[in-house]
Image 1: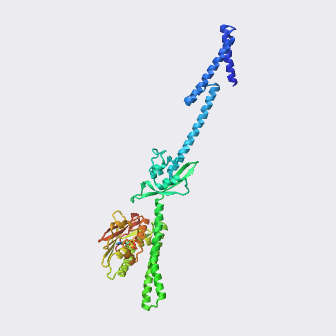
Image 2: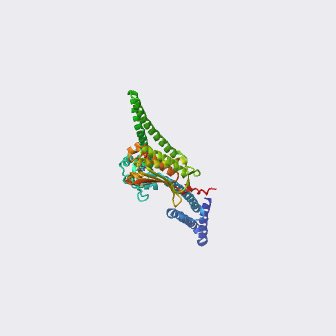
Image 3: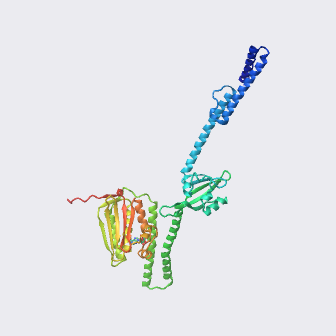
Length: 446
Ligand code: ADP
């Protein structure tokens, strides 16, 4: 400020001296006044220049201009620079935050007070069929028209979620709509955040769990009812020794059926919960096949006096790695199925070979009734049976192929089923190359 006063005084004095020098003493005050006016004019011009820069183009603020206006311009520029840095940092933080929401597996939609879309992440856009740019400020209820959701959005009661079919997504091959859980969380007054979550797998698991419990209860209830009936008969009726032993035999059959079912259930739960099968434990296929043969021949004799034409061929002497108990159980299940479903006198051919790419294949071919194509994809579902009565008569639990599929998957292999109704079926357990190694041929005896 003293600088300002001194420049003002200097301008007046210079004007006065100039007036005195040119026009004499009379012009002294006039010159001083003119000098002061000139100083004011210049001062106003500099103020206007600063104002115009502030109004139109902050970038053109005068640099290194001295005086009060110069300092003001400098301070404004510094202040703006700091604000710029802060804004950029805030924008970076916002971008990081949005990127984090983008990465979320759940859908997020921000909705304004009127129910219009303000922002949506890619997941929600895909699930709800929203265009992240074009549909901004569109009413959400115009795009997601499910009546349950529209009512939920309008209710302003968001204590629970609502589950709807995704408007734009279908599940893989089944083509069923994807199921979405939609929950709104209000924030900042009347704004709302919609979270969407794909609950298809969860719903399927819940349905499977319910069906499974219902199936197990049903499977156990039937033999249990029969057992209770026999117990009551034995308690209430005077039976002779023959009848008693007949009833006891039938009771033993039912008890055995329940025991088999419980054993299969335990096997399945062990398969689901156990550590992956070891890669370093090797078992000779020859031994596994011999066990299958022993069991198969006994079962064939037990089921049918006529028996079956059974053949067991080991094309390549190999070892396979994994859990021997699981592998044996899978192989025995396939052999037992073929024998149980093929009428007496039919053929069952069991074969082990190494495929040209090194994988191992255990196959069971039968000349039984065959399986219609529509049943094949469902055979490994728990308790799925085509011929219910044949399965029960022969001691089936409906869990055999589910166990085989589990064992195959745990060993990195697969179960293949080929069948033609009326001509028979072929079930093959294929194991990956890493789990199969040929045994060296025995050398000549000394
Ligand atoms: P189950 O204990 O009833 O045999 P599985 O899971 O082993 O149960 O088999 C499921 C169903 O697949 C059986 O009920 C049967 O209808 C059918 N199935 C399995 N193997 C054969 C086969 N070799 N020939 C014809 N049908 C079969």
